[in-house]
Amino acid sequence: MILSDRDIRKLLESGKLVIEPLEPNIQIQPSSVDLRLGSSFRLFKPSEKAYIDPVNDEDLERYTEVIEVEEGKPFILHPFEFVLATTMERVKLPDDLVGRLEGRSSLGRIAVVIHATAGFIDSCFDGHLTLEMSNVGKLPVALYPGQRVCQVVFEKLSSPSEKPYGHPDRESKYQYQRGPEASRICKDKELQRKRKPTK
Picture (cartoon, rainbow, N blue to C red):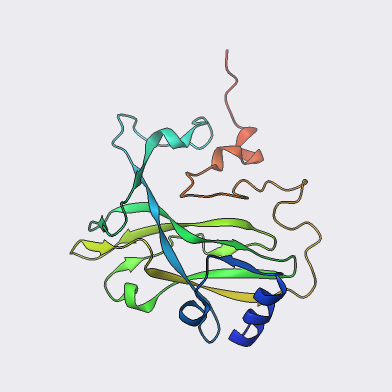
């Protein structure tokens, strides 16, 4: 069941759902909440390495650099460029709610894709959302920190999660993230078992 604006407002008022900072009259839509673009962007650097190896490359951050955009200035997303960005808002979900991240139609119509694959937000996630943005068009696009770029749709679970995101028994690699985090796929247990032993 997708939550309506009425239910979203009730959860925000009760503190069960947290989205901060929030301008309710602008950001709360009929069945979603718009989120705004943060000022940090993580770009991939040119590398002499032939490929990224999630089994043996333990520090994937070294392939990237973070750029902070000054207030009032845009980040230019070039054609066929991929960048990790972040939301301005921190989002915290209760144990009986999940979220689904969607791009805004207005940006889709100028060829900006907001997430490559990771549009799902687990119950009890707490942090800023990392956006996997790309420009699939032919012209560069100016993106301004603070502009609404995506929306979150909330769905009720059939019952509260037994082991939600952040539970000690879970690999919650991105809990409490604050900026555009690089991939932590090398921490996946099944990949760690494949790692070559170091001498």
